Amino acid sequence: MPIGAPRDDSGWAFDSGAMRRMGKSSITPPSPELSGARPFLRSYRLTQADAYTSVFAFRHALRGAHFLLHYGECRPPDSGASARLGLVMGKKFMRRAVGRNCLKRLAREAFRQARAQLPARDLVLRLFVRMPKPDRQMRRTLALEIRQLLAKIRSGAAQGGEKTT
Image (cartoon, rainbow, N blue to C red; front, side, top):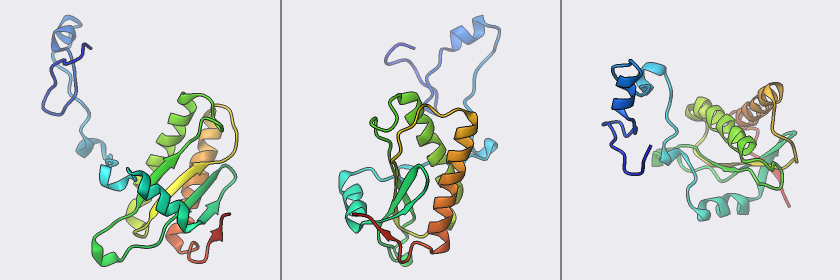
């Protein structure tokens, strides 16, 4: 698709002429309402370095076999704030970008599913074990580990927490 290609109302770039030549009358992007997907909005992400710094400065984390889930202080529930997620997948621990992106997708999906039940605090999920690109079984294991870490935060096990040095 060339740069500056026309986009439909949803923001998807597509070439309707190519679709007609292939025998398809039009293409429509998947609708979040129809697919049941919950979007990962910008307000649910840590986007600035200061937010990451404050979470790391709080120095509390939950440890899994492959990940550390750092968490910041709880924000007051009356402020209208919700949980926010930051991801740190260093090249030192997973060399290939394909693998790092796969882990980020797993983490975002687990967070999307658990966000409504999580307390209003900033979370940073950090890979800390060197590993190759995960295969199907390993992806299931990693997704389960992420869900378990989020469940610990949700259940309040992170009140005292483990201090990191």
